[in-house]
Each structure stands twice: as C-alpha cells, then as structure tokens.
Image 1 (cartoon, each protein chain N blue to C red):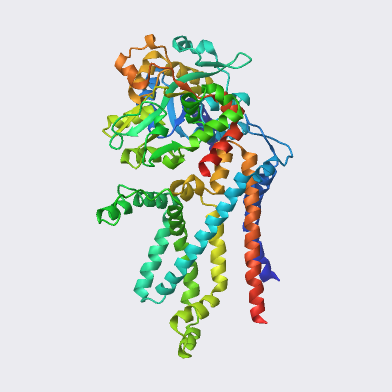
Image 2: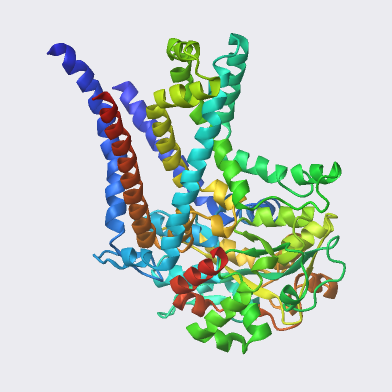
Length: 349
Length: 283
C-alpha cells in the first residue's frame, strides 16, 4: 500500500518535471554539418540567455528527404522538431498539404524589419513561415588550377576545364536558370517544355567537361579544395569560409548574377511549443542577430540593410549588388517529375 | 511426436517475425506502387497503373538493364577471384590459414561507406595510385581514376570478396582430396585437375555464390554513387532518388516491385537450370 502510493507520487513527480522541461526546451533542426554546428554554438546560446528557453539542436537531411520525414511524422501526429529551416520549394510543398502550424504575427514583431516577401501567408491569411536567411550559389574555382576567375556563366562552356568540372546531379540547383539567362530568353524560356528541353540540351554540352555530378556536397568541396576539380557550382558562403581558412578556393559572382536561394523558419503542425517557437523566430530575425549570422555563417541576411550595423565590406562579402538569379520554384513544382526525369536522363546517358 | 513439436514451436517465433516485419512492409510496398502520385504532397490512395507504365519508358528500361549488367559482372568477378584465392588459402599451413581467415573476417567489419572512401582516396589524383604512377614515371599526366565503371567494379569486388571467400572456406577445406589425387595419378595435368575435377565438383556452391552476390550487388547504393559516374548508377540509386529525393513513393515502390520480380525470375531460372543438369548427371 505504502509502496504503491510512493510509486504514484513518483510518477506524478516525473510527469510534472517532464512538462516543466518541455515548456523550457524547443527542438530546432537545420541542415547538418557546419551550418547546424555554428548555429548551435554561436547563435542559439544567446537566445537561451535572453529567454531561458533551452534549444536542442538537431541536424536535418537534404530538403526533399526532410520533407518526406516531416510528412510521415505528420501522419503519425508527431513533430520531429519544433522549428525547422526549409528552402522555398519545401515550404510550398508542405504548405499545400497543411504541414505547417499557423503562427501569430503579433507575437513576432520583428517582421517589421524584414525585407519584403519574407513573411509567407496562406490563402486563408494565416502566417505559415518567416524568412530565416538567404544564400548564394556561385561559380567556384580552385585558384591553383584556374588563375583568372570566371566572369560569366558562359565560361563553363567556353573555357577548357580539362574535364574537371563539378556540377550537381539534381535539376533545381539553379544551373537551368543560369543557362536560360546566359544563352536563351531568360526565365521565359523555362515556361514551356520545349524551352526546358533546349536548356537541358545546352547543359548536356558540358558533359565531357564534368568529372563529378555530385549529390554529396562534402565530396564536391573536398575535391575542389584538393584540386581534383577545377571549378563548378557551389555555395558562396561555405567556399568563402574555406578560403578564409587558407584553402586555394574562391567564389565568383558571374556578371549574370549569383543564384539566390531563401530559407524559412517553419513550425510543424503538431509541435507542442508554438509560443516558444514564435519567440525563437522573433529572436532569429532581429537585425543584430541577422548581422551575427552574416559574420559567422557568411550567409546573406533577410533583414533590411539599414536596420543592421554591417559595414559595406561585410555586406559585400556575402552578397552582390547585381540582380540575383532566382530559382523558378513554380516551374520546378509544375514540371517537377518530368523535369527531374529529363535531367537525370541527360546526365546518365 | 513430442520431439518434433518443440523445434516446431521454436521455429514459429522467427517465422512469425519474418511474416510481420518482412512480408508486411513488402505488402505495403506493393500497395503503394498502385497509389496515385500527388506532385505537391505525397500520394493519394487509388488503384492506378501509371507508376508501372513509367517503367516502360526507355530511360528506366536502360537503367534496369544496366543494373543487371553491373550486378552480374560484379558477381562473376568476385567469384572468379575469391574461389581460387580460398583454394590456395586452405592448402596453406594452419597459421597462415588462420591469418587470412581473420583478415577476411575483419574486412567484413568495414562498412560500405568506409570502403568507398578508402578507394576514393586511393583513386584520387593527388594522393593515390595515379599520383604514385606519376611519381615513378609510368603515367605522364596522372588523372583521378574515379568516378568510373572500373572504380565501381573494384568497389563491388572489395565489398563481396570476403563474403564469397568465407562461403567457400568450409566446402574447400573439407573436400575429398582423394579425387584430385586419383586424377593426378592417372596423369591429368594440374591445370586440368582444377578445371575438370574441382570446378565441376563445386558447381552448386559456385552457382549459389553467384546468385547471392548478384542479388547483393543489385541492392548496393554507396558504391555506384561514390565511385560510379551517373551512367553507372543502378536502379537502387534511381529508386532512392525518386522515393526520397522527389518524394515520389508510388514510383519508387513500383520500380522496387519490378526489380523484385526481375530478381526472383533470374534466381529461379539459375536454380532451375543448375538443378536440371545435376539430375541429368545422376541418371
């Protein structure tokens, strides 16, 4: 009798402490590797200090794989994380099947200093996502192998790369957009399948120059740093950080522009900590934290330029003044299956 | 009666587990393969043949033929190398035999990813075999040897070698050597003893090793993606791309079902062929 009561007491105590902990802790996922590690060690501690909310940081896989996991989890009414960093396309796909929680805009006042277009509202008027950061994909080269930096995307075709280019194996890297702008009538050409086929045929001309069609970013970076590859398409931020470490690599914005991608914070529908998540988003988009992201991660900010205390030099290091190339997400969503099959067919023929 | 019931009862447990954890997901896969793809979301429950129809486009057709080719070539190569190697090892002094067996066993501990990375480094222009060949002056302008079909085959062989070698170990060690001695005393040259006496004696074992390796290589993912070019990627890679990358589960499931049917058909044909001949030899 006595021991039974003790057990009940213990269970009650355990439950109380569990709920107390869960109110004070949120799980945040970001792309695994350098990204997630830097966020965890440099950015999140400041949030915990200000709010007392602990952040458990987890690594998430590449976009589509993560969306698949989120979808499966949602079917089981689970949220693998309270907050997640997702790319444009993942956000739209998730929104269309109701994966994201509705956020209260009044709880995230810092959206006032965001650049236009970084609050995503559904057709019903619910706030579903808030901009987190932007990143550029550019023309990267190994400085030992290539002495003069490329000036245009056309250099991919026109220069002799000695068969040492590295390009991504997926169709939504931005190469299609860059090709369309460099050799055709821009995004207009991407509107029809005939246009897309012409673009893919143009990319196919690169095949003899391409040694690695990479699916693993680490493999590309390692090969570029080692000089196995002379150049290719890669992230501006990671390349510049690696160059700052003394590796013989550099990233160039071609005259047609770098390829700009956006990432958003979303809260999975089944998260139990929406209030804490909103506080977290509000913190992450605050101009001083955006400036901190620029300095530590080398990504482009989503806050307005004049709201941040970045010097011109700091700003120029992560961004360019020209018009960026934008992933044509609606084309990739509309033609998704057809386009990815065509692209895969082209590279694997 | 009672003596038989106990082993049967013990057997019920793994059998039940098999049905639950192997057959149930398989049944689910077949179900999903008929679902309708929802491009924005996931899939809608339906009964359509679209996913199977896609396979008969030239692209998937080529990929599946390619997978069958690389898996069979890999299987033949690995058996061709492992069988004679084991034949030599079992004739060694006990100490050396032990050394090789332990080495082969420890090779099996390495994961596919580690083996892939090791070969990636060995094949690289700056630190591996090409660099060495350039250094000794055999290769004037050394280039990275991967990704290539050859590199991928080397990966396959490394992956399967110890498995096949250890499969042959008990059979080769315990074989009846008097048959070979008889052949030798009757004047058969040693090379012919190997091809005319030993190989036919081990035909069943060799065929089963070939089939095992073939099925194993059909399912590898890391070696083709790490060491192979896009034109070497097999069906497993494409299925992963479709199911995980494009979130197209129905197509991924349909392609898997087709590969399963292919595999079952080939295994069936091989076992049937080898059994038929054995019967012919007996009568």
